[in-house]
Image (cartoon, rainbow, N blue to C red; front, side, top):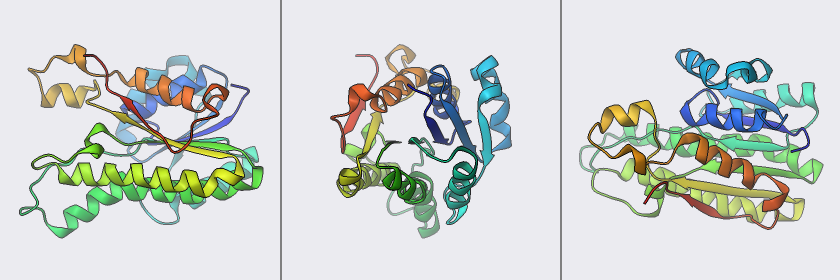
Amino acid sequence: MDGPVVVVTGGTGYLGSSVCKAFAETGATVVAVYLLEREIQYFEKALGPLGKDVILLKADVAQPGEMDRVVKAILRRHKRIDILVNTVGGYMASSVEETPADEFDRAMALNLKSVFLACKAAAPAMKGAKRGTIVSVSSEAGLQGDAESFLYSASKAGVIRLTESLARELKAANVRVNCVLPRIMDTPPNREAMPKANFSKWVKTDQVARVIRWLCSEEADPISGAAIPVYGGP
């Protein structure tokens, strides 16, 4: 990596922190967009000395206008955005019959609208520069729904379709758009929720982060519009 400007939404979360670290290790200028103050302590611990070089910008990326503000601030300071990584998201479970309409809206805002608004805000700068890479985090669950998982599955499926459409829209501008599909990631909340699971089969957040970093490298130049499985152990 030749010092790109990298924006990571959800940058202080478990996966977001790993992504920030992966890019910071290469000497990139990393901007972590975050919302929850309680995540800062984990972020600082995960990145160690590299954390001092990561720029933190607070914003609710699921709210219209917030990512526009963030992008303008980054462009004023750094003149460009080379890479956007969307890691904002979260698992929500409920049956179709028992799900209130506002809970459906919340799931879509968290997992899909956040990606849409971030891409919408960053795309013009990338188009103008005739270069750029966007990677979003979907999920294996986006490939097939299961009982009481439609909120998560449907919203993550939307990320895949958004990725495919945007890749075609930005192809002429030399902007690549892809997404990754992790299975269950090895995070403290997932271990707490499933204490009897075999954690060795879960994909590590740093493994997912390295795949994302590779998708943003010159080695992955031929790849756009793809949904890359990152499932972990057998």
